[in-house]
Length: 394
Image (cartoon, rainbow, N blue to C red; front, side, top):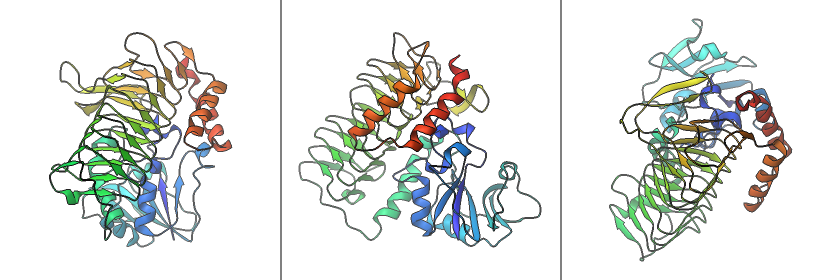
């Protein structure tokens, strides 16, 4: 048996984040969705995604496959419901397909994720279900994902002791420090949710942290950072300044003062000193954002929405991002005034192109600083995205 996390027809709806990864590799909490499914199910996990991503994120073969919506947040009840499916059954929630139980090489079509075929037996999911279908769903569901992941990672375990130099508001038992984590002279508030500090991560002195919050392995909160939950910063991130309800998926830097709110950053991003995002319109109205699926600015249903930035995005010092800005993969953003609300992948400044050669050189330099290698598969994916997005830059 195996689990296949399907993009479920959502690849374009979750761009630019899914230019470089399947839906199931998104990280709304501590773990990626795939990591959580693997830990909870004990089964091999593969992906049904775009062909150009399949080399790095392959499918898995098995006689019996559970094809699962890649954006579905797993918890013990949901995983049990999926694994209880018999061949020929589909798990639904209020008519929405969440998982198919298939035999052999049978796979669900994109249209099946809208309306499952009549010949499949529908099984209604009783517990609540939460699904990532748009980029802003990542920060909206961050708090829920953190609770799921914390239950999975800390059950039956005792964390490292918290230094007496810290001040705790709320229940100190809701703070969990993994081995090697350092937290000194900071204020930790658990009245709204738990706080998890990963292995070898560091919260430097003077930080103010309100849960729910997770700091990934080897990551750092810089001195005096102000963090409002729910927030999740993935492995090896460097974060400072003021941050409210954001997901930074890993290996990215917002190391200086400036405000980041209701935003999602991919991996290998870098925000220059004093970068600020607007996350609320002056009219307090609904925010619109660029949709790659609709090729237009669309209503998001969000009153608060800041920046969505794809992998390897960078911006210069004092950059000001308008409400609901979407920046693509390897966009290098600088210049006076507000950048446009849709910044295509591989943009250079306001009108130029970040050449593929320069983008790859920059990616390699940044990744080497975290002792990560830019692989041939990474290069192939970035080259494909460069070619795929040429029309936007023109």
